[in-house]
Length: 122
Image (cartoon, rainbow, N blue to C red; front, side, top):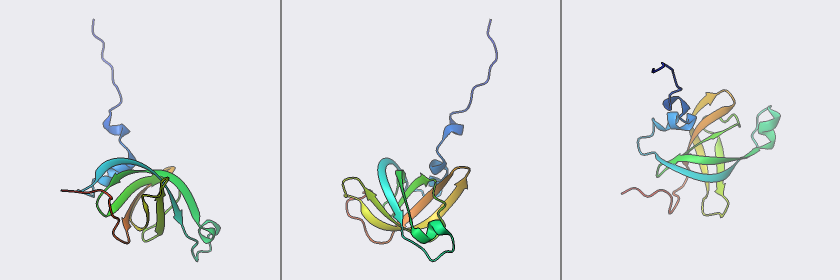
């Protein structure tokens, strides 16, 4: 005899970054571990005054943007330095979109300069 049951939807398990990527039609899924560093600011906030460094994974990319999640509360126009372990990605980017979620922030940041050999689109 069959029994009725419910199961959680896989769609509900989608990444917070995937939700943000919907606004970037050229976004391609990637998995690139990076560290980002936000230089010290002029804020009264002590964390901002000393700068912030965090490890994360770029989950989506476009030819000009990277999208990732972090625990650092970033804001629009924050400038970040992004670097992967072998140094093949070492670039400055400015935050162009954020979505705040409990315990994490989904971020889109646009490169300030052209990054050679990044995501190449036909």
